[in-house]
Length: 308
Image 1 (spheres, helix red, strand yellow):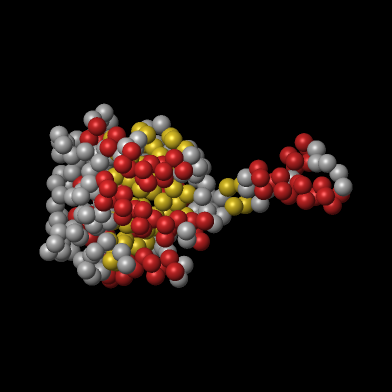
Image 2 (cartoon, rainbow, N blue to C red):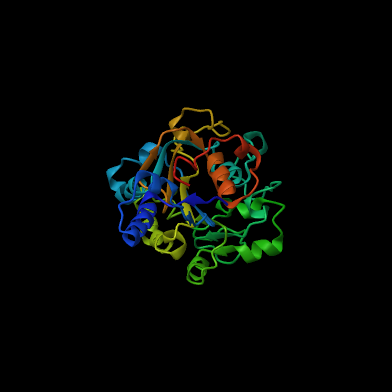
C-alpha cells in the first residue's frame, strides 16, 4: 500500500505553530526542512460497473448532470477503453488481466475461467450484486433484473464455493459492512439491469448512483482518504459492435468508455492519457499491494494522474 506526504496546507500549519512559539516569522529554509506527516494509505478499492454506454453518451451530456458533477468534482478519464465486446469478456478481463485470446467470445452463462484473479490474490473481497436473491446465485431472476453474467466470481474455478457463499452477496449487505466498518479491501458492485443503464438508459442508472453513492462518499473510509471508487462502463454503445474486437487498440466509439475516479485525493482531474480496463486492475493491485496480473503488468498507469 502506498502512502503520500501531507499537503502543503498541513505543512504550513505546522510551521506557523512553531513560529508562534518562537515569536519569529518562518523562513523559506524552515518551511523546507519541516517534517511532513504521512497521510492514510488506500485500504479500500470499490468498483461500480455500469453497462453499454460510450464516453460521448455520458460525459458532457446535460441530462447526466449528477454523473458529470462527479467527473468534475473528482476525476474523469477522457481516453479510456474497454477490452472487447460483449459484456462477459470485459467483466472477466477486468478482474483477471487475462488477454483477449483467453477470454470468452460470448455472454456465456455456464462457461468457466481459470484464474488467478482479484478474488484469490490474498486480500479480502466482496461482490455486492443488486437484487441477487441469495449469496453466490447462479440463476437469473425471473424478472430479468439480476443476471449472473455480471457477477464475475461465479466464473472463476479458483474461487472456492465456500468463499463464494460468504463473499458474493446481495447488495443489501453493503450497508451493514459500511456501518460496522468491515468493508473489504476490494469491493465489486454490480447494479441490476434496470440500474446499470443496460435496459433503462442513462436516467435510471444515474438515479441509482445518486441514491446509492452518498453512503460510500460519506463513509469514514472515504472521507479519511482510505477509499477510492472507480466507476466504469463495461463496453461502449453496442450499436454496431463487433464481438471479439480488440478495444485496447481500436478507435471505434463502441470501445471508448467513461471512467470516473473518486477519492479524497482526487479533485477536478480530467486525464487525457490513454487507459484501458487493465489500467483499473493495475491501479487496484498497486494500491492494495498485490502483484499485477496478466495485462495489468503492461497497462498504462492511472494512479499518479489521479493523485493516488
